[in-house]
Image (tube, rainbow, N blue to C red; front, side, top):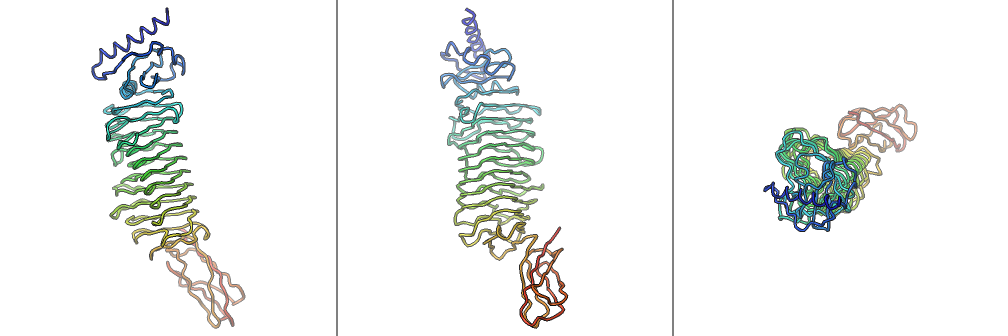
Length: 441
């Protein structure tokens, strides 16, 4: 008897919601009679604002996380999710596929909107688009606040949509953990590209961006990516004006074009760090620069590895007015005419061992290292030899060691391109002198 009363109350609540809200137009249909008992106390009450579930693949419900009563139910997951999250709070999604046909809009929510969306596992908790060919799955335009999203798969279903859009107001301290951005035009759009707007100072942890035209549009400052995978996108990341981001231990693989696209210039410093990242199997190389000259605050690769690529240049730095720094990076032997192609707007600096720099060539451009070493020969009867050190800066340290005694040895005429090794005594036969040069800013 008590069970029948609970079922009756739940159905009445759904009917009351349907009749009382012309805006949502939720469809009840023939809802299964035992839906209220399917997830009772799983997870426990009070754990979330709402617990979202799917029953029989086509019916969805939102159960109040405090009372345990089903407040919203119907066949349109878009409206169920939007109603459950309209005031913020925490939404826990049970495993299942949630088919959405219209935008889940959290727009115009003011300046302190907070929402958490948690699934059980991205392999089994899927929000899948089945609406128009263009549009947005989640829209946070004209809203400021914080978004936390974990353990869920956002599937664009091959449509030209944006899975998550931020807009004209600031979202900060957001966390995306184990979220899959899949098969859309844009996985995530960071929003308006000026300081104080859009997605800033937020983290992505073990996320996947795959089969998108562009995985993420980075428009603002302070985004950090940890152990994320970018695969089979046309462009994995698009870096817009005034943006700044850091990538740690991320993998960029099998992009149809290039993993990094630098799109536009900005009025504020923008810089990007890639640390411990792996780049492989990109069809058009690593970086696509803009069509006209722009300035960057800096582009730094440290402890990165670059592997197979197409016959195009591995890295194209055309039109970038910046310093591009490689620290302890592995670059493979060249199979095309040049690994690095650029113009004279920028300076490329390698801080790494000579073996890691093997077979790197340029098109008449400066490719330098803060440190370099080699050997020179003072020929028989001479007392000096001039060395080109290729640092691009005037060395602050030069050490020379002759292979045999030729008296006092010293260095003079040190410039940004060369220095001269002198000796007291002209040798009677050629003598090799080993040298080491270093520039410390």
